Length: 361
Image 1 (cartoon, one colour):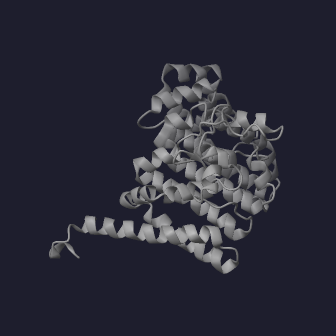
Image 2: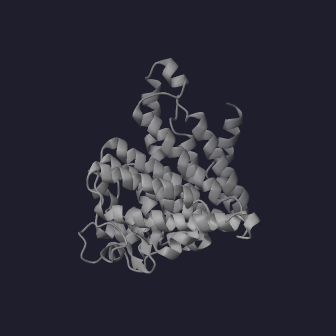
Image 3: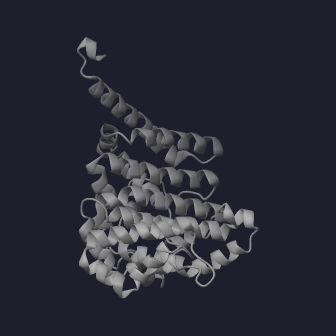
């Protein structure tokens, strides 16, 4: 019924219709998640999730997904198969949730399964943005350390990556996929079997989801359990080391390609992966909770790798303009929010001289 027939406001009717759609589509998606094996079934599964993804951007629909247990299914699938112990689903680790029928036993590695993973991360991010209850579920950390005691000898390395305490939740899963260079356990075994272009797609999607969700829960993402501050530091250090090689490669290209931002996969990939962590730093150090975020990042020493990224290419080379702009915005946000503590680090790292040099370009 419409508003004129006494059935309620347009917003109420729209919200009710959205919740019904979430229930119907969610049930269909969950069934397809377990049963789709052939291409036609997987395409229908992905199309269903695409429709759900749009609905989850609206608060009533996101809240309905949480209440119906659909959000748990999405989280369990988002962590499958590489790191189920990192993600909590309504009090259960995703590995246990899968056994309880909330998620798939495993996802394949063909292009449709990779596409599903990209949409799952985006759908979960949409729900977290739309509803505070969903945000709490999405950013919950596991109580048990990852990996379990029965894991291989790589367990100590993996545990240190997520902070050494509990698993850092969905955000830790994204951070593991987002870091440049060789993948870290437990993600390494999974991504090693993917095509290079699929690994790059997952990395871009991980940064996209992080940029949406992390600023909503700054304290959690920078906590020891999640390990966000340490992960950002590692990303910037790795990108600074890779910068010289990428720029040298770009400089060997014809002038037209270089001037237009072209180049080979290494140089363009470096450019893209470098800007994302700096955009995240800028967002973390802006708005509510910015001061605490800036101090946490400064304590981790984030100013030094930021300046190193800016100087990547040294000598006759220089970082691309977009990268240098991202560095300046991140430094500005950190120093403005962090106050004297961060300004002292900037001066101690010869940051003032670097800023003066930027004025002379």
